[in-house]
Length: 489
Image (tube, rainbow, N blue to C red; front, top):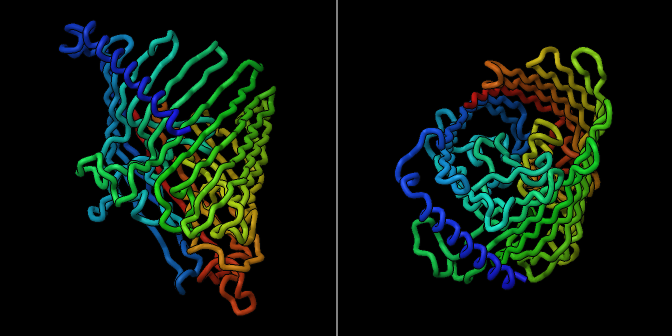
């Protein structure tokens, strides 16, 4: 199937080259002289301070406290060369205040690895400067109403459970590839795209491409998506989608700590999201099924059979301050004892989401081997302010699989063999958001408290040597807070 896709994309590239050259030929003086009304400039500065105590739940024999400040600065410039041809570049600087060493790169889909990557300075909170977005846009790409975006770009769909901007990380997701949008009617739109998540022909950005990096041959990691949006039903949105990950790189060994998108696999994701707001009620339902195969690097092959479901139902009362009362439940399968062996692979993979929006603001849970549910309450004390209170019960879907954080790595080294405890803990979140200067600036203030469950309290204890994660043995709770100021222009 991969061989059949390549000629299609080559043909698309040739067609784009023709459209691009044709646009240049007709542009004339427009290309040479920059017109102010065709230039678009935007940007933002976001500064966030975070504090968290008992971040390690007693792991490694001590309780840790984290406090740091991160800053994200963006400047974007776009220019319309012709009415149908333009480009956009978004430069981004991400850094930790005082952290000038240990620079990281803003790479394609750079992900946190291991532990709870959101809670430590470095990784996705490290220092980097580069291009967050850089693409060419073409309208009416050979067909009226077909638009193309080619280059590095953000992908945001639905409520970002699978594909989101992930700006909370201070680095965010970026994807290199080609996206084609087509609106078949005013109420129906379709997106098709191909993106490269890993390139195996170049060992480094400074090396010559064409030779095999690491002797593995020209084996790359790609994904293809087809996302549809239908608004034919009044006050409803229906979004069926398909994502196919095909990664041919050699898997050097199955990593039980972070099985997210391991090399040497083909994974198909079939999803359906339904969003509705009839009268004072609103709801969102999303179901996803994953199938395919995954080589585990230890001589075996895992057949993928995973699924996940999310549901949020609420009522907004038609009274002053618009109070909303809701309940959310999220579930994603785990793999049990076969997570690193030759059996089935049923751990759901979360792909590239903005997990901070879901499963608790403390970022201790990802949509992966989990069962989380709880009530939600929000109120608008003013036209510019929103106050939220969420409470969560967090559980493992499969006690023999790992506890995965919002960064999708296994928390604290993974679950010990033979664990039979599912109760991770409970979480209370309180958040206030206020807009200033006509919405140009936003202040976010948040506090979270995590009540430890038996999975954490009994880990490593003499009475339960096979419970929880390696090294955990703590009945102390965790507190977390943040202050986040964002200014956009």
